[in-house]
Length: 139
Image (cartoon, rainbow, N blue to C red; front, side, top):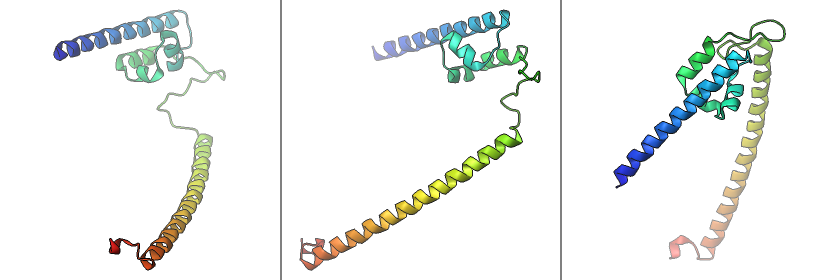
């Protein structure tokens, strides 16, 4: 019987996937025919799916890419996800990375000091136990 359940679960999962895919395609078609701006976030919201799920569907991604691209407010086409980042964006990311590195260095130093302190306390405790005859050697 477990094999029957597994088969049935697989069938239900495939059916649910197909229904979800049809819902996403229908939402995409409606958005395109209405002249709506189509983004993955908006499509996910309209179709009731997650953005990450849309990214796992190659045919849906291809269909989105084939639609006419909306213009940004400046009149320039929007940047694609694969387009290189602007110089200012890269500078901001680099500054944030340097800041995070400094924070991690400080944290590492604090952890090293705490570890050294803990080792010192343990050595002191071990030394006290051995002098009192309570060390592991007397068992």
